[in-house]
Image (cartoon, rainbow, N blue to C red; front, side):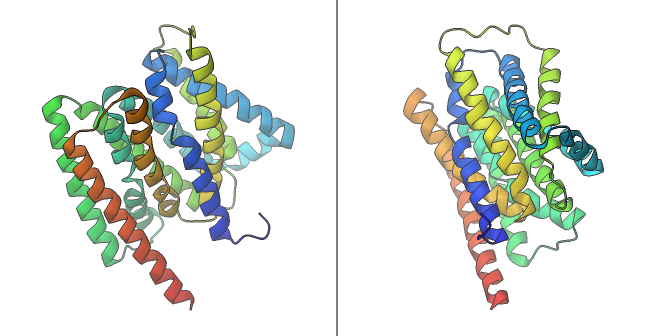
Length: 291
């Protein structure tokens, strides 16, 4: 890692994180646990796993690092915990493809937040991409309204906004590591779920599915996604979530035969292509400037 540039470090972390995340939606579908039980375990297990690792590495200095996160840490705890909750609720209230298409909006939302809070003015290509993706989302929302999935889609959009806000916060406070705050965020997720959970019992395949999901698809990725924006922009980090938008529904379709609607496929394709073209043009522009 020491021989890599910041761009390479951030991109590698984001890529590995998202590849771990891609089967996450499938694990949620395969689980027989009720929604708030899922939320609880997705908060509690990663909390203890990552906290244990942090205490081994940093010992009591962990708490010093947490205190050093200051206002950035407090803000990140809020966005991180909210995003973790709304993601599961969205998956449980709409098609997986709809949720992941909403999450694909995170790069564009990151660009908007970067403009507002970091004074990173968007260029013409970004503005055009934002307009196109916004219209595509309205198209998907209209379809969901007809079939009764609008609540899940809105939660998916909130998840995307939370991812974008979190990446912006990390970018703004890139001098400090917000992993300790992310650990606390997982604890907050578990505590919130305690108010709504009906049953803690893991039965049958859930004994294996839940721990595997919480460690592979939640604990490992959240550490990497929290570190990556220190090296590349929040919009660039969230661009890697397009891989989840593509692979997530494929996993679910192959295993549980859940097929997205035609409107979701159409709108999602436009969103992915728009963001992909925008990213290509942005990278090309950056390379021209460096030369």
